[in-house]
Image 1 (cartoon, rainbow, N blue to C red):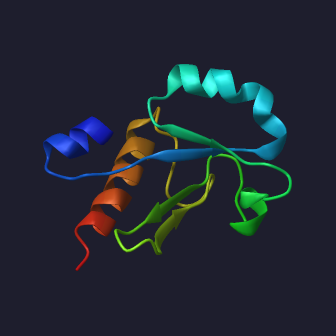
Image 2: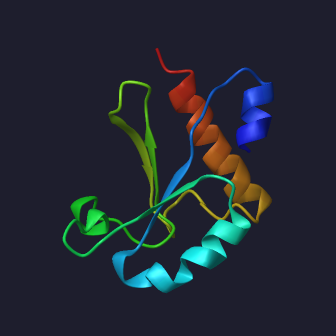
Length: 100
């Protein structure tokens, strides 16, 4: 999706935050993904700070503020392996990218 958006003239950065108690799964994620992986740690606990759950997606605008939140299992699919999920995430990104 990042390349698709780039070819359309959009610059998007993707980052994943691995859960603090899932450090052993880092390699699996790194083998599948080409974007930055940050490792959460118990003393920071980013997931709790964001009220996050597995596979939730947060979209930040260019100014660094939260522009959209797509919770896993919410009304918009975040499953990038499905057409509906892919289109929902891409649409949310485009909405933020094209916002005034």
